[in-house]
Structures are given as structure tokens and as C-alpha cells.
Image 1 (cartoon, rainbow, N blue to C red):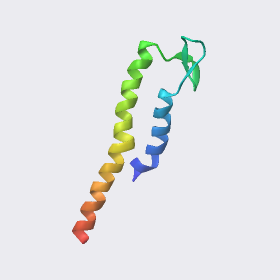
Image 2: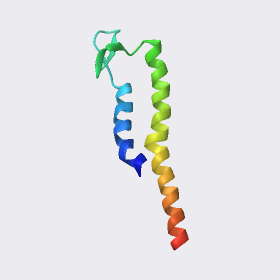
Image 3: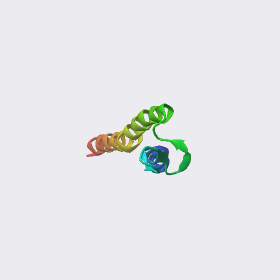
Image 4: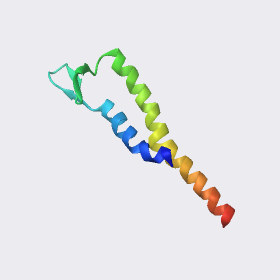
Length: 77
């Protein structure tokens, strides 16, 4: 139950990592913080981490909750 309460907030923040804005023809910055350059290799590493977190929080937690709920429904069926 605790995982469901904070999963939406975590997903919202994680999706912001992909939200870049082009200022010049070759300069992309993060919309949430213009100091972060989206073409920086450090930011690229965060993209991979964010992708894993999206899999876990946006898909994994709802899937696990569904599996548990179906198991309980069959148990009490």
C-alpha cells in the first residue's frame, strides 16, 4: 500500500528527466533546471537510471499489485 502512495510522485519526477528544451540549434537544457545540459554524459547516465525506475515504478508496482490481487481473489474465490 505504501508503494502505491508514492509511486505517482516518483514517476512524475522521473519523467521530468526526459523533458529537455532546445535553446539554440545545438544546446538542450532540462526544463526543470536550465543549468543541466541534456547532452552531457552525466545526464545520459541518468536517462538509463530513469528508464529502469520507470519500469519498476510505472509498470512493475501496478503489475505486482495486480498479481497479488488476482491471487487473493482466487484464494477467496
